[in-house]
Image 1 (tube, one colour):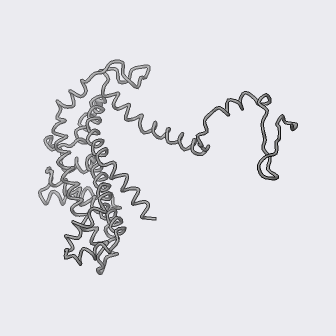
Image 2 (tube, one colour; image 1 turned 30 degrees about the vertical axis):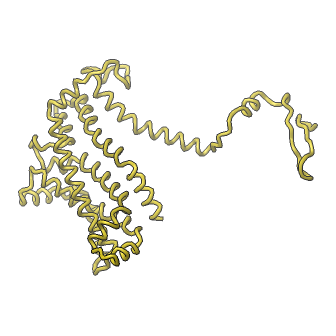
Length: 314
């Protein structure tokens, strides 16, 4: 028996000691701690989980507030005391939004987004393939030029863009807005997809050419499957940007109510005399739902594409 209340017994290999603690000498805290399951969580992990939890609350609270505001009765939006969840649920804001033309806004946004994203992918995939596989004069300079166009904000060149669109007769048309999105968002898509093409071994190209495939057949039948996660990433990014974009849409479509998108429709509920926050919240909730559905449908490919891109880029 030692001075601290423990008993030592020799056992096992020579020179090895086993310490047996006297239960009577242990504190209540030590006895409770011994009964707890060992989960192997380090203090750093706990800090990381706390940071993640705070970030989730920080990003989730505005969404919950918007949903709550859209379901509140008229006059209860800024009531005191503040309640995140309304005592009474009202759908009058949604009725107001749909009577104002929500179905038209959804249709226009869907048409512009689907055709715009499909066109961006159709242009970006062959261009990225060419930059990745072909060696031609001026290749590096052209890649730098593509990157430079990506770095220029569309707001800075909105005036010359409007002049060009007017001269081409594309103002107040869906086609004009789609072409504008394709021209502005294609450089980013080319750079992103080129990185995925670079990770695909060139031996696949050589094997396909030996089997008699042309360049287009090689791209279509051999290379599209390995870069499918990258295409999913490009599709999600461009869908979010196109669906929620406001400045270019308002500049091109103007005051034509039959051509308004979701972002312009939400803006219509604001005026110089006041803002209808309940209608804005309801329209925002309806506008978020298609993006949530698209992200859930492509989430597996999106996460896979980000992970593969980060690992292969190292």
